[in-house]
Amino acid sequence: MVTLSALVGYLISLGLNNYFHFEAYTFIFIIAGCILFCGIMGFWISPFLIRCFNYSVEFVRNYIQKYTPQELIAGAIGLILGLIVNTLLLRPLYLLFLPFSFIGDNLLFTISNFIHPLVVIFMTAFFSYLGIIISINVGLHNLFSFSDKFKKDIPGMDSGIKDFLTDEINSERFKILDTSVIIDGRILDICRTGFLAGVIIISRFVLQELQHIADSSDSLKRNRGRRGLDVLNKMRKDPNIPIHIYEKDYQNVQEVDAKLIRLAKDINGKIITNDYNLNKVAELHGVSVLNINELANALKPVVLPGEEMSVHIIKDGKEFGQGVAYLDDGTMIVVEGGKKFIGSTLQVLVTSVLQTVAGKMIFAKPK
Image 1: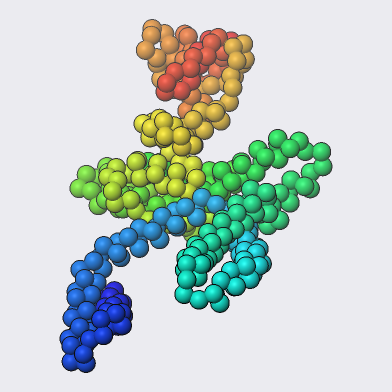
Image 2: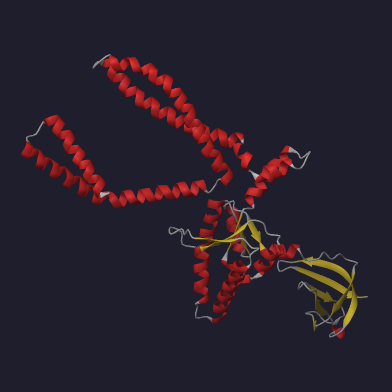
């Protein structure tokens, strides 16, 4: 920045000399003064300009991440086509302004020299933008899209379903894990089953929070943090689990949950969690959430009144004479009059099913 600013100062001194026609020794002082002044100004404003440059690069990078690679390729092709059209149209325009360049130093010559650059800049920007927008919106990226190729292989598919399929494939690209679901550990088994589509995203700030928990003086927190790190190591070593460490951090956001929501919005991803509060806050921000606890409840077998099952009574219940048993998934079964059967297995008849916040409770009686 200092070097460029000094060069600008030198050019300014040349311009001043062309206008004022300084003497030789005076011109040397003018050059030195302009170079020194502009160099100091460049040194002073360079941090601000560098921050502006970094902010602009970060803004463009975040904006580009909203589009698929196919859309970016289509946009680049559209940009090239727009510039080609612009070049073909500028040639006749140049021939139109060419006669004015021979008129001389008059009003028409001045007007033509002023209008011509503005027209060139406007047309270049217009056709470049038009080419990008048309190539993306018309569907040029479909030529590069695997999802559209897949849709064409299914004859008779409704257009509405095709559009839904494209949106669904794009929305399943990124799954963002929060700290609680990593410590929980069940995400490893879910990923190994192959039911979870897309790339697993582990953010750098979540890793830092896990490391902070693993270094805690509290033994319970320390064990939870270490278990989460072990789960991540197993996921990284599994070749069938696509996992990516996202390095970007949001310094202006303090809470990890708020950072996760911001990340999900930036990359159009879904948050995987078992945190009830994060689930609700993310829904308020319009971010899709996959809750592991809701998945576990949905996978529990459906039991209807009147069904028979074999259970093993392990303890007595809260009410007099009740016995308590558990299914393999942890669902509690309260057996009326089952206290006397503690330690034994018997056939029971389901009388009712109660859905609570903690899960399902099944009430039964001996057959």
